[in-house]
Amino acid sequence: MQHTLVRHPASPCDAVTAITVDASRRGPTLDLRYAVTGAVAGVRWPARTDGTRADELWKHTCFEAFVRSSGAAAYCEFNLSPSTAWAAYGFSGHRAGMRPLQISSPRIAVQNDGARFELRAELDLGGVSDLATDSAWDMALSAVIEETNGRISYWALAHPPGRPDFHHPDCFALRLPPA
Image (cartoon, rainbow, N blue to C red; front, side):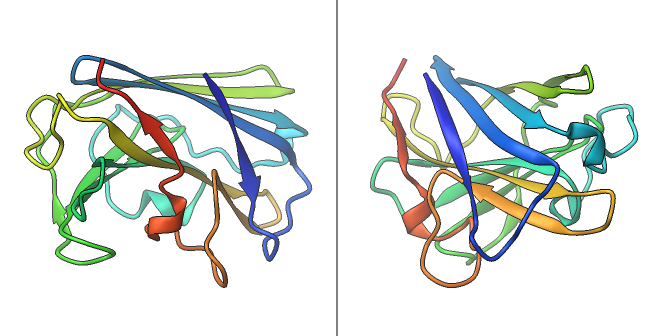
């Protein structure tokens, strides 16, 4: 099912008109497809890498998924860069107890035809102890878009009041049932 991300009102963006995300589960596997439309040449796309783990991807154009077992305080954060670099972290609560998660490297594929950018990712989350594979998962889907002029905008399914905060419980607006 396709979901539309909403731009945070305090972060204008000229290059992007829409961001949609398809999210689905196959057992412990999470499949994500982010699609960006607009004048995507105005987005600063990170240079392609060899798909290794990297920190601070959120400082530039990046797609994110926050996942928790339904009703749990603990959650996981996954950063997926258009460069194919990635990161995975676990938290015990809202921005608390951050630690690196040990997962298999996600499969990330990107396409950019100048009018539409697409990132597809497949994450095997079967070994993540914070996520029960027999439980529904609550998700916060988001994107950070850096334009070529250096301006950054923040997109999410839902935003809490005030500053952008993708970790906030209000952002966990999607529930995926067990596969």
